[in-house]
Length: 68
Image 1 (cartoon, rainbow, N blue to C red):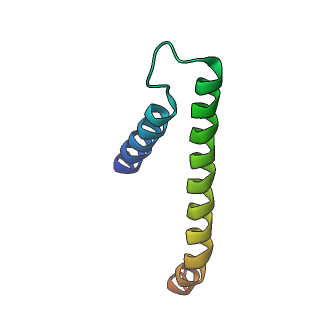
Image 2: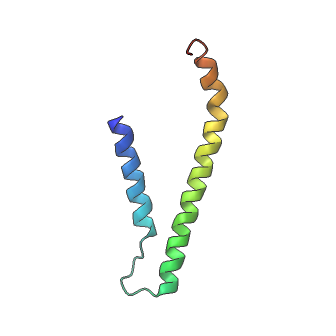
């Protein structure tokens, strides 16, 4: 459980670092583009994770036949 939390925080740090503007004096439009690209990337990751979970759900159900 602790390892999953660590990986989640690491991924959040990478995503947050990618969303920040590299230049301190960047214009508002550049910052907006940076943030929207970051949220676009987050949406893509969420869609991929959802598709993977849907794809493996029959396998998980098969493995959990005895569990009620």
